[in-house]
Image (cartoon, rainbow over all chains, first blue to last red; front, side, top):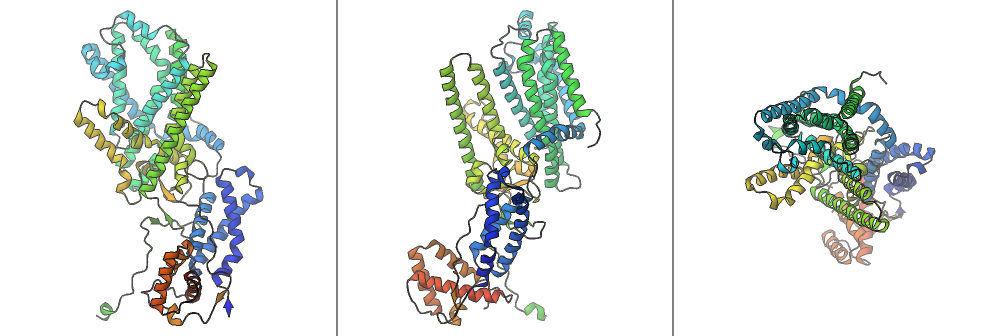
Length: 328
Length: 292
């Protein structure tokens, strides 16, 4: 006498549904989402639930291990599909600019103030020290970075670095280089914030020190106002971006050091989500700054216009981030 | 007093999967996902780095050829393209691939891995961006540092820097979930999500119910042994099958017939019928040590 196993009948009855779900998932995962018809999209969650039921039944009645493994893998794939991200990339990008980014920047206002204050502190300290005795300059700025802009340079040499001969040819390379370089530094100073804020704080202060040292150097030769314009045109965007990167680093480090009522892991993940949004925006800001620095500064030689452009950018960012806006 | 001397029930059989984690869907079913091992993660990363390097080299050669052919003022454009390609590959290669429905880079796909949220929720773009931004400290700074070995004058400072980087690089080896710092901050982890195919049912359509094996022969083994037998039958290695068939014949006293393959298939069907019919009555015999 022969019989058919119950687990075998169970499989025969449901196999078509599993195969159908597998086929839909294959197409979905390959990014052919557009090729799925409405009926097929609606079928995925229904088939997913049917497969979950099959899985729990198979675990109870079937001793065919490969079948249970298959159903586990299929259910997990369907789970990630059904409960996965549902927005398209365009929607996601639009929401980032309209809502998420300004919101995240606003919610980090405390960290932004601290980070800005550290920047400012570094600037003032270096400025005062270098004005008192120019030897301090070399402690803040390395020789390669100074490129001849040091206390021994003459007025003419310093002036030329600000209003140098125009190399219009290489501007886009310069802009791209500045952007990629600055973005890397910003991402790094953010990522380092994980170590309880300290490296981020160091980078913010150091950034201020270099700035202050240069200001003092040029001010000594009576070029302070002109250097201001040279820095201001892109600096308002760039230093703002670097300050925000530091703020995001502080936010993460603070979440780790003082998790409050959450567990340390949860606090870190929550802080990380908000900081990530800010950092995404910082990269965008640095791209703008790179363009301003690479193109704007070389093409605009008038100090007053440089100030005007810098001030306009600052107003733009502040309006965008901090101006109250209606809900929705 | 009596309670203490009573025999304790044997501990429940747990499969040897130290990386198995509970993932209960909203429908209330545990998917029992398995986390990726550190070795798999490293292999996936090396694959990805090789791809990045390959693309970069390819792009450089292609740009050089374009520059050579056109030969009029395109150097600037090429410079820009190269800088941007390098930057985006380094910072957004991982992010871009993990944002796709597969939630995995080509390297992870090759090893059957994917990124998932630790709380089982929706994988957000922020989390993916975040876990990959942290790569800067975990991966690119240490790589730069290793290549800078000849340039550092201060040996102690270099050693300190190495130790500092080592904390980040080796982080996944020191927690049971194999999280790297980026996973920690992003609230993610990397799980195995292999794309399995449905194999044939070894029991076939019909199972002979009587005559071939005695009741004692079928009581010799439990579910665990059945699974091992299934594995042997799917692999179909002649030497293994012969050894297993002889072992079963010796242990159960079953009379041999046909080839080892035929014998094992018949025994598998009979044993599965036997164990499954008891399963339907709520009795799962874990392994041969469990009472029948």
